[in-house]
Structure formats: C-alpha cells, structure tokens
Image (cartoon, rainbow, N blue to C red; front, side):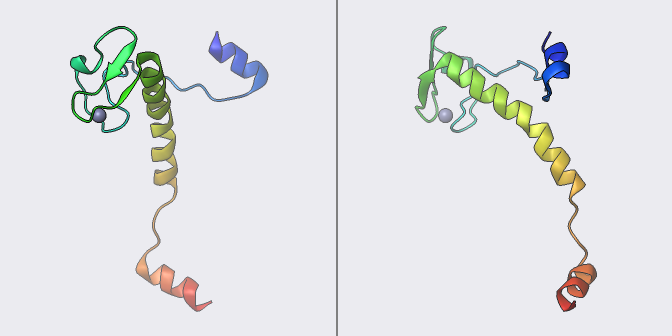
Length: 91
Ligand SMILES: [Zn+2]
C-alpha cells in the first residue's frame, strides 16, 4: 500500500527489520528487554533515559531507515589519493 502511494506522490520507502526497535535505548544504544518496563513506558536500565515506548520505537525505526542511505552516500564518495589532493590544491 505504501509503495503504491509513493509511486503516485513520490518518495522513498525503506524497509526496516523490527528486531530490537522497542528495546534499544536511542540515547546510549543499550539493548535490553528490561528497558521496556510496560507497553507504554521505556526507561533505559543503563543510562536512565525515559520516554514513551512508541516514541522510542519511532526514533529507532527512523534511524535504521536512514542508516543504509548514509552508507550508500559514504560508499559513493571516496577519499582522494594524496597525489590527487595535492594536484587539486596546486590548481
Ligand atoms: Zn540508555
């Protein structure tokens, strides 16, 4: 359904594995089932970060969705060799 809507209106659909998205602390990255004490409440047992559990899940899904895009950009932009850098600086 989302893919169909995006074809009409434009956009990018990223698929994110749901594993640990509700158990990972967006502040320190600590993963534990104990971080999510109730359905609605998230509290990191390592750093004490507190937030609504749905908000934490949304933050983690957004980050996971953006991560492959950042890697693709990093892979597309390669560092220049020292010789090429020197040549460009001298122009
Ligand atoms: Zn934490």
